[in-house]
Image 1: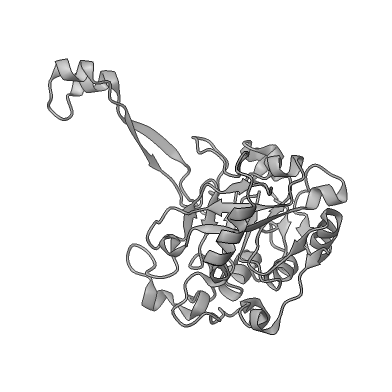
Image 2: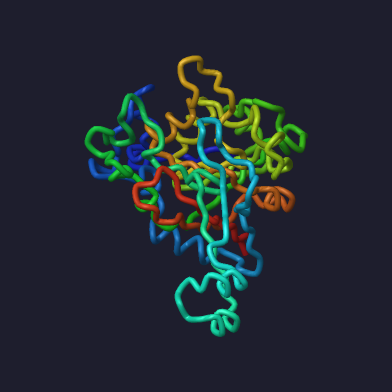
Length: 323
């Protein structure tokens, strides 16, 4: 069987996408205090069952490394990734920063550094407070009530649980016979369905789905990786969300097709998935190794940094093939 699995009525009632109203944040089917949306479908039982199937002899790292000059979102004036030394072995001899004297500074070779980065830099998860409508986000939380001077008090990266579940790769370029999707290619239900049928892959509620565009073939050149990216359109996002997926990831910068085809919404998939469907998004995910070995089902393991209130959490996701 391939495509979506049959969904029983009880599970359907837990999938926010079925009751979504366009342009309005959805109430959570998991209650008024819920801050993680469809990640609630991940459970200890699911984690146990998936780990029992894992072949730990090979691990696929789905993250990119962070470095100065890397491709990252700066379209709105966001800061690029920066790293700098705050202590060096010879500098400590000159500066004596902690007052231990030249002899110790010469003996103890001390290096340390600091970083500054946009939270949406590199491989990361967009949290449910990242996008909404008219000042309100997932589950009706509002900027007036839940956004302080420093960060949101709800739905931030610190709320994300460790993620262990059934991972699925949907290789769209392979299904249409190309290495990389064309610029601004819209991945809709047909493209997703064709890829799933080609792979013989079934999507089940709670799955963590990674969509490949092939854009990582251009990494790390910002001039080819960033502009006019292929990605999900709203219809493609609805198709996956109504299957009950717990998270959607992609190998591009924004998951969605850019520029948006919606003249009224420059981030139509972000607003839909995060505010209406309650589906967090993973971006800048490295999928080339999985695709080259045609691994379409795997055990997904990952945990975001617990950055309080943040609209994104850096993550190093891992894929373990099945036994």
